[in-house]
Length: 547
Image 1 (cartoon, helix red, strand yellow):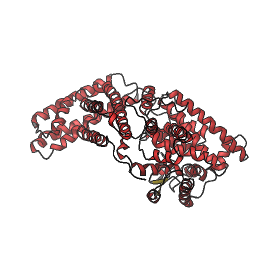
Image 2 (image 1 turned 45 degrees about the vertical axis):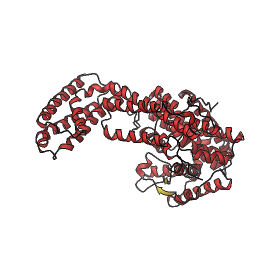
Image 3 (image 1 turned 180 degrees about the horizontal axis):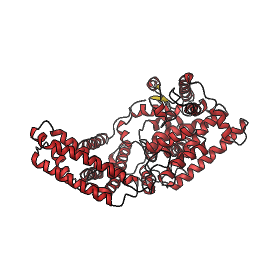
């Protein structure tokens, strides 16, 4: 499989990325008018550049890159402006900042300050900070902890930027050092105290911790649907919740069939308990994981489902997950290295049993291939070799949609060997349906983290510690708000596209898989347009793939 060549927009996209990096290195106070205005100009300038490009002369791959960059810029600018509006709502907490901003802006140009004058300025600003702080104590607290934390972050960002500027001159300029040492110590102390006060200056009208210990930030209906728009998912949040419920109902019906086959009747949770208790001793588990990985690769090659480069088969590895990390990731993580969750000596007996039961062979056989081949390892391998500039456009619908699609596809191809394997695959499929439901209800401010945990325990059959870890990972980790629903929704997109092109006779299954995996990060509807050979300049999302 040959690596894809650069498109007409390769250099342009690289230049844009370089601009973003350069500006982030220069404008370090991300809670300032200067920062917000400069980046808004960046996005506007680049959108103007796109308007002037000869779109019709480009290859399909060049047109695809154009659409990717345009969508990225519009998304960045929308959420950047939303963040600016949020900053403006608390900007009064740094109303005293102008003289300090002048100081760190002049430091960037290495302008020698008038040290005696600057010391007086710091003393004056220190008084202003204390006055603003006293006024804040008398004012009505913020109505949400999120707004209080934003106010605290704005003060802390200002403090760090001023401290960096101070350290530039300190000791290198004797006059500056003599005049500024004490004023800076005082400024640091008062800004730290003020920030700490603001962080807790809120009324508990929106619960920060519902007792679960999980603290996330629901983004609300408007921003959820904007995220869906920029990921080219033309559905409302409510429509997606209904799809999650529909997919869950299918899984539950199939669970009952497997449960009846195992002699547990319609009580599929008893059958699930049976499968969980088929765990293996810790010492033999990593070797079994390797066997499962080899089995999935052999299945791909036996049925000629996609091209698996020899180097991809050679370079994946295994490692074990720490007990601390299992609090957030109770199951496998993967890529070039598959990270295996299993008990460690420091865990309590209860946690050891939950880890072993949750990582039993039948659950795991359904997801080892998700993490390695044809899943995340193969994705990352191909992304390094095909259109690598598109890694800027990371979308969870392509990342997790592809890997979840393979769970669908392997189910259709009778990959599960028996009822226990089917229960293992159904557990994960049910979990992905549940992710749609609980993550959207959370971000719509309908459910708390504890309700999400209870839902996973009651409706999917998770071990409670594993459910807590899953919810913590969803809302406290580095994942975007659509990440959890992107597994199944993205999988349904890929599955629907396969039906169009493979069942429709336009491509073989292997051609479809090989093409898809070599396109790098792309919203799947846009990739669909590329595969159909038509990407108009005024491309708009409208593919109702669930219908």
